[in-house]
Image (cartoon, rainbow, N blue to C red):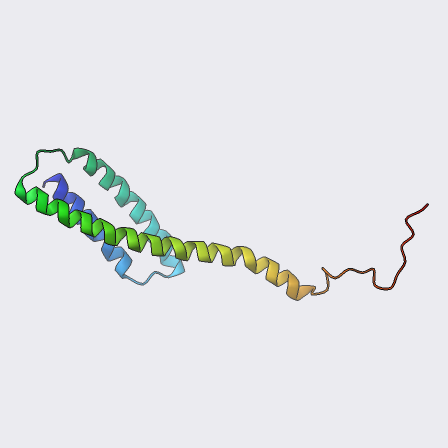
Length: 117
């Protein structure tokens, strides 16, 4: 199989992975699969050399459009990951505020502190 055809096949496989709804449990496995596929695609890109036939040019146009779709899907997954990480960082702070809501309030209400010794 030609490297460009293999590249397109790998890209199609990656797009199929994104078509499924990602749950938090599946997301890590899917990301690992995508990382492996990206590494395979990198080796195939190095094998694609000119001169190109008309068929290879058509494959190239198709690969470019598929790459654009893939980039959009990767960006959405990246945004979801960032959002989940932000929420995970925020959660302990909000839990602490529920446990002791008056922790941040100054306790010097109505008292005089003498700074001299």
